[in-house]
Length: 474
Image (cartoon, rainbow, N blue to C red; front, side):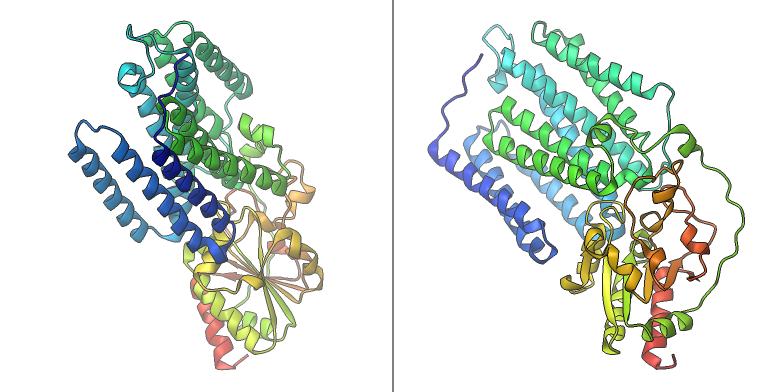
């Protein structure tokens, strides 16, 4: 076992400060009100860590390193400025894939030239503890990369959001995982190239296999889970490199992502173990789907909606991915302001997995300056639907679908949903009656007697409602 070289106390102090900044960043990001401050702490911590590492390591070619940082910084800046909020989930998945790929690249570099990394004896034999760190790092990194690629393709619409069920998938997954762990154990005895590259290839493969069977309704949990994986991959590589900043950062990301995944699984009534196994919430019958019979439904207009909401005492707004796609959050906030001016109590109900990633709706509403005290999570507002006059659902299908409570064949069965069907009137904004939610299932709320369907683009419909409220013609 090798011994790490003594660390300069000033370097240790700098990494400690960076670690504290990362902890404060996570604390700040836990609330929309403090998220900007959290981001600043994260940026400061990363700047300290990067500068410290550059100053304390002898660079073969500083110009190349600084050039790479500049290129990456420019690409990141351009992407941050151009990316739409609706595309944020797939951007996050893409970033996770890059973290995983970076871990694989570092592990491969360390394996090919272990003496340069100080993890081998003069004969080139890699230390046992470094082989374990390297094996785990490359396995987690490769799984993170390939899994994130599938998540990106599903979120971006390049691949169907419906579960892709492979025959004997659980047996294949367990066998592949067992082979990876067995080869990592064997790697401690034999550092032959075939062992290292076989672990790498199998890990890339299992990443694809784990995410392909997961349906769209469960994708927010997948994004959170992959976030955790990327953290553990970074931490493992931190041990290999002897870099405490990477260990701290990776552990924070890994732990926070795992905790968030667990919280979301509880919110969706899923098993955390089944998430890690892959393909949870999906079976062959659910994935197959089926044609829906034509059922009567009640059409409505913006004027109808404006009249009904202006006469109400309480309106609960339920935003979903359809609102995000249409970029209707600003018009929605304006609608809420007009209703409040007429004495209507307005609240926003947020499902934990509304949208395509954790907190997606919270971010969009915060962007539109919706007051934080009007936004409520599912468990805090669900019992209020029975007393509210109007539930205004804008682009949220799966998270309002009562089939989750009654239909055991549904892919969303068992997931807690917002009880919008209990409201006196439901106004449902949807582009057309032909489409279904991301999970690929129809919603009985569309056809209930108290439901009025407002078909069309979510932003245009909301703008028309705002005009009707503003004109006083209701």
